[in-house]
Image (cartoon, rainbow, N blue to C red; front, side, top):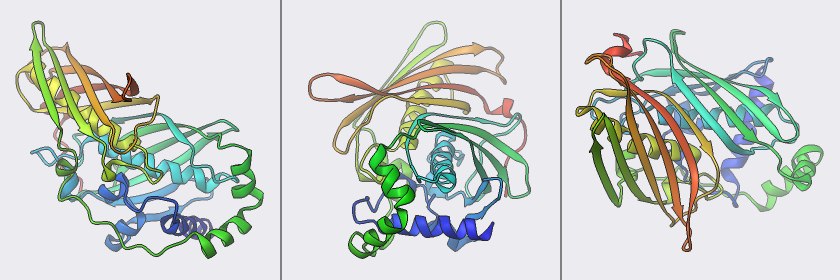
Length: 333
């Protein structure tokens, strides 16, 4: 188990020094990199013989952008994206990172979202891996073992024949060449004061309709801290943009706040790049009643302007419930 984890950590170190990859990513902004969490006794701490990769995470205050200090479910999903991707790479002979097709997560029954300072343990595992697709699952638990959330991740793994040769059978040669000619020492990037500072919208519109319907739109310019290492809008950041817009629509639909996102599924359809304008357009509708148990379902579409026509980057489906309906389980320190 130790040797498997050591090999993965060595691969992660090499990737962090690769000259052709970005030095600042949305995962850095979430403090979800191993090098950021290891100083707090966390990061990747185990890689079992069954393929289960363990990542321990202390929730920073700066990523809890809502006034109630909850960790947004979309941020949890973004960390799942990071951890399950490395769990997949760590057991794949060709070390394919792939691209996300679908990500979904749901809080366990009776749970409110984690709060700043909570200790979370992500247990990620590659369930099935083929030539084209990979399927990963993840459980998120407290430090004492209580279930917080479950998640699933589907990835397109087809990276082409050249990748399979370079990072499969020829990996030792590829690694040697990259270390000799393609590596650079980098300090950790400077982070935004809060996630809210990183994601300040250029425009925001909210409106309500009769019958418990709310609509919202937020427009953002894709910037460096929102990207993944290859320069595209990070899938977890897209999830956060969906949650922000849907949260505004949901609050408008019920006429008050106090709602938490209990389940979320994101389907990825296209890429967005640095400098592009993206709009999250969300609609929320009441699904069941009762002042203390009011729930809503929401859909959101993330559009990117291409200069000629908008394209759909991703779509999301969400379920909100009133915070009182989530039960009394609060801090998970």
